[in-house]
Every structure is written in structure tokens, then in C-alpha cells.
View 1 (cartoon, rainbow, N blue to C red):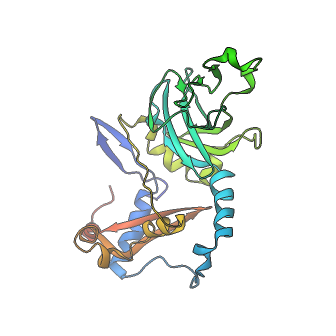
View 2 (view 1 turned 180 degrees about the horizontal axis):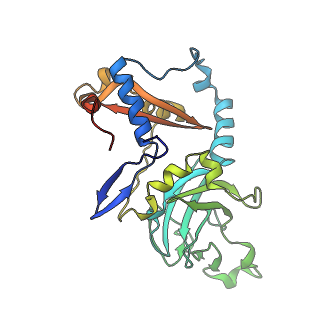
View 3 (view 1 turned 90 degrees about the horizontal axis):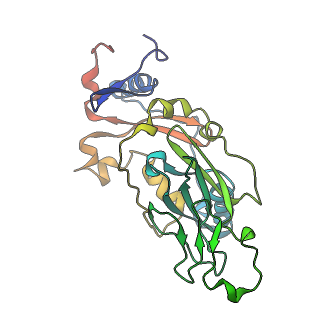
Length: 283
């Protein structure tokens, strides 16, 4: 049985859920690393200057290029299960509101009232409309301005020009991506498979769109450069020293499979019992 033919499944709610077809290939590699004491290694040593983390101009460039101009993962589809379901995101420089529309599609917009700039929605939940808490301006699920509180005092106002600015949104494989730049600046659509750079097939086979409710996500605030937070989660080298009574009890330290998909990485941390599979038929 080849890696392309292999698949791994698990029973959920009485039915078999498909797992991605590369699972056995990754498992073979992980088992080989454990049995040989090896590791997936880069071709050369990488040295990183400290100004990559400390230079404020570079940080501003990263925020603009990575968080505003490129698509960003916003939510699992199941987080917006029905019309009116919404979720807010604090993208640097552009707070975003993602809403499930009446026709089942997903729309995203800048989460800023057109009157005085306050947020019109907070957290996540379900709504019929979004009303700014500052002065009561009301917006529909599509971001259109529906009512100006005390509107007679404003004179002639074209409400059709004062909706929440829309940003690009796309949904596929149970994933929702947004680009935190108004469509008036960048009207190009998001191609989810293009964003995933080859990972789309694996996400599709995970059937994330069929996950049961409820799914909840939380925001973690950290006073550090974003790269430090990412770096800390992308390597198991620290398991034995920092997590020796928890994570290291179940996962090998300083061993992992690694695959690059464009700007994305797929890291396979290796469970301590993987060696028990030596000699076990793959079927």
C-alpha cells in the first residue's frame, strides 16, 4: 500500500471520519526518526539577527504585508453555524467583523462605525443587526447602514455610502479567510486553495465543515513580537526542559517531521509510543 493509497480514519458519532491520506507517510517518517535517533534537518545552519525581532520599522512592514495585504485565517466554518452568526477579529490596524449572511454565504467588513469610529460588534455570537453603543447607528448583517439615531438632525445624508467597508472573505474546506484591507483598496478575491499552497486536499479530507457545535475560539494577548509567539509553538526542542512533567511525558523532545507548503509549515510532533508500532501491519 503506497502513501497515496493510504488513509487513516476514526469513528465519530457512529460514522467513520476520513483523515488525510498523508497520515501514514508522516507516521512512517516519524517512526524512522525514533528508531534511528535522527531528525528532519535543514540544509544549512540558520542564524537570526536580533533586529528581526526588535526593529520597529520591520515590524510595521510585517504587519502591513502579512496581516493586512495577505489573506488571514479568520474562523472555522462551524463558528458561524447559522445566519446572523458573527465573529470579530482584532487585526492590527483593521478590526474585522465576519458574519454569516441570510443566504448562507460569509461576508467580512471593517468593524468600525462610520460615525465616530467605535466598534459595532464585540466578541462572537448571533445578531439580527449591529448597533453602535456610542450613538446608536444601526447596521444590517450585510454591513449596510440601516438607521441613524436622531437622523433628522443630520440633514441630507446618503446612507448608501455609509455602510461598513467590506473586505474580501472566502470559505472552503471548513475554513474562512479574510483580507483586512477594504475592497475599495484591494478588490481581488481570495482563492483558498491558492492560499493553502497544496494543503487544501488534506483540509478537505479532515471534513472540518462537518464538525459538531459548539466550537469556541479565544484570543490570547501577549506583550511580545508576534514571531516569538509563533516560534515557541513550532519546535519540540524545549519539551524535555520546559515541559518535562507534562508535554514531554507523551511526546519526544527535539524530534519532529517537517514539510513546507509555501509560507506554511506542517510539523509532526512524535508521540512517545510510536516505537510500539514497529512491525505492526499498516492495515
